[in-house]
Length: 269
Image (cartoon, rainbow, N blue to C red):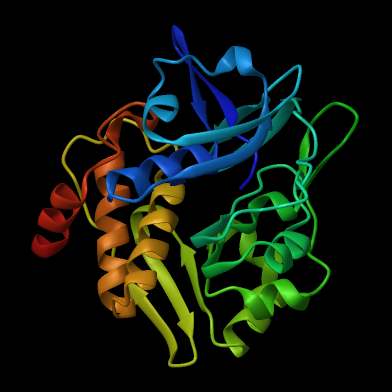
């Protein structure tokens, strides 16, 4: 649950955002994915992989959320060009095995979602909870105001290293409540925080990576699926790292892999 985005590539526009990468990866792992978010129907072509593989429950908006990203000296600067608006929670929400709360730009009351959606497993990628923007659209990060019920109800949280200073109360409270918190570090791998302590895991490498957009979202989706299946943390992290590595081989969602491919690479890692 979260808003999809439109990502700009040379010569083409592709649907993106955490919910797109997450549900496509879930479908690649054999699950029935359902995307709940807000955007423009004009951006959802029937031939797009998301429309062919996933149950898309789109709340209509004149625009789909769109960012302009610029990376300078390893630091990413974002500008919000279009915002689809807040997701309106319907009166009745379906039960699910895995609920991935995946806001990208303050479109979701995550605490309300976790209270209202019956789920066996709750995963959170909280980047959209700490983003705000000024009058020019320049995206700013602001510290989260505690963890609250959300931190106590999640089973796993995945956040990028650059987001952690703004998420410290949520991550700490989630771990105290028994959740696994994973801090992704790109090519440097990831850090896993849990009741057992803090452990470092290396990244899985692939030859000739093409595009790293969405790799963290793929990692989160694969991790949540494996943890829900009962895999040990180390195995789930290795599997998720392999899924993220394979996603680098194509533009946007084109590199998302099947369970067989991921398991093969994870076994070699």
